[in-house]
Length: 175
Image 1 (cartoon, one colour):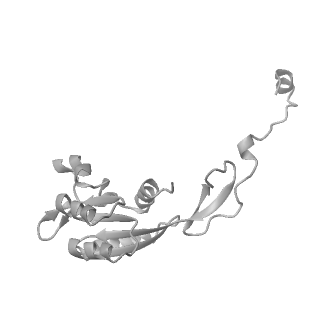
Image 2: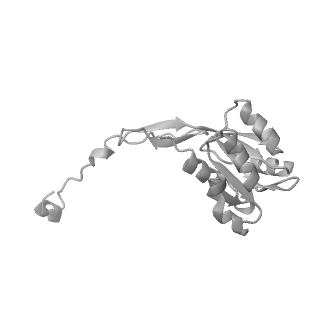
C-alpha cells in the first residue's frame, strides 16, 4: 500500500497469504479441538485426540475426584484407568492396553514413594510421560524428579480441568 492511498483512506486492506481460508464457523464438538493441519498454514481441521491416563493411587477417593474433573475437560477425550498398587499398575502395562500417560501418587502403601515406583514403570518399558501427584511438593527430593524417570510433578490442590488439559496438550501433543 502506498502512503498517498493510506492518507486518503482509499487503501484496500488485503488478507495476508495465510488468512486465505477461514476456520470453520461451527464450534468443535466435545473431544475435538481446532488445530492447524500439519504442513497447511491457513487451513483448519477438526482433530480428535483420545488420551488414556493410568492413575496409580492407593486412595480410591482420588480416582473419584479425578474422574469428576476429567468429565469437565471438553477438548480432549480421556479414558481413565485406575490401579491401587504399583504391582497392579505393572500388570496393567503388561496387558498391552493403551496408556498415554501415568499419574502416580507420590506415596503408595506400605512406604514407597516415586523414587521406587517410577523406575519400576520405566523398567517395565513404559516410555510415555509420568507425572507425580503429591499433597506437598516441598520435599527436597522433588528437585531431582527427572533422575528417577518422572516428567513432571503437580500438587493435588492444583489439579483442575484446566491443569489436566494443559498437561495433556504439553506432553501428548502430536508430532
